[in-house]
Length: 133
Length: 133
Length: 133
Length: 133
Image (cartoon, rainbow over all chains, first blue to last red):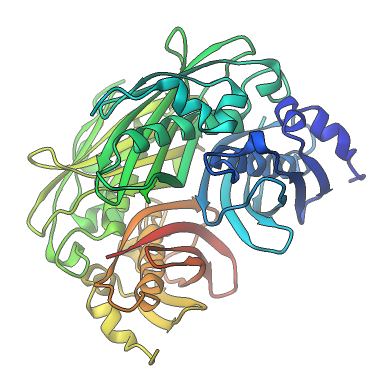
């Protein structure tokens, strides 16, 4: 497996590009995506909106699903995702989403994604299933 | 309970405002939020990104949590959310999120939210817990 | 589609049989499974254990997945399930799980299951994905 | 915090006792519960039923919630739980559920639980929220 073009992964997904996500690492062991939280990504009170955290985790796990697709597959789609919200992060925070696989198979892959701040505080955790198309 | 100011609910949540969400109905029986899906809200292939659908559902359920807060509560926050992705919606679609309560309590409320297209096609379903602060 | 043998569905699943589940209805519109809650199905305090409710919902949704399998499929397996616990039910309660499909497809089906008491009190809600084998 | 009486935790929860769960470790860092999978705990085909795995994880995470209760709390209850099913385990397997906390707070705790076979094969993963009563 050759190294994927990280910028191409993001630019292929307009919502990820729109939200400023940056792929830092993307392979079968781990996917890392970072973003600087802007004020427009926040909820009341100026901390990360839950939907933003879910979108970040979804993109990160899906990138993992994409990079581990079996030969001949056409793509991957998220079929389910569940997030527990743990902590708050204020606008300006550098967030890091770290996805690790629970399973990589011919028909699905399953990913666990932690979103943390730069100093390692846990903000949310997501588990999701990627379907192989 | 007096009628909430729908525009104020959205403008209090910068991410919802940024994504163009519009509160159509918001009471203890049902919350309806609509949005026109823009190209920047899409995934590869030009259909609604899963993270966008999760953000839409999260805001809708949270609005329900907010409008049903018990007297004296300071606010509400989503503590967990799970979404099943069912169908695809292309850019330009008018999406409607419809949240109904499973439970409205003193310490939590629980909401089920369906996202549909204008012609009633099911795009996703979310269940989430709102914490009373 | 001919009427399935309800008793055969339960007896094919030893855990369902062990827990006393009874299939009342099982078709593509709805699956209903009932059980009388025994003391050994309870948690501290003598009300339904969350794991028992999850097992009941899992069996009910899986029966729906089974009865709607596309031609040629070998079977179905649950790949994910999420439950919100809403109310409590004491030992002796007659519980009814009612599953309705969100999606019935060639590769997956997705089911929503409510567990209620005989007088319609909501005890839990589960959403789950059945994989077509 | 003194060492809890492991047998007492199980015997306080009739469903856990009925299913043969054994608490091996239970503290704020980790909870380990083991069980030997009996034929009556299986689904068609003689492997662990998903509901059994969910019940095992639920009890394990709830034991973590119990042992980390803040002073003055009356107890804990699971309010939501989500499981991804990853692998199969045949009757006779020794299963080990390992729960670790994502969050331990005054009002909730959140637990991640892996169920593995004796040789470390991943069978399922659960995330759940425990409410402080």
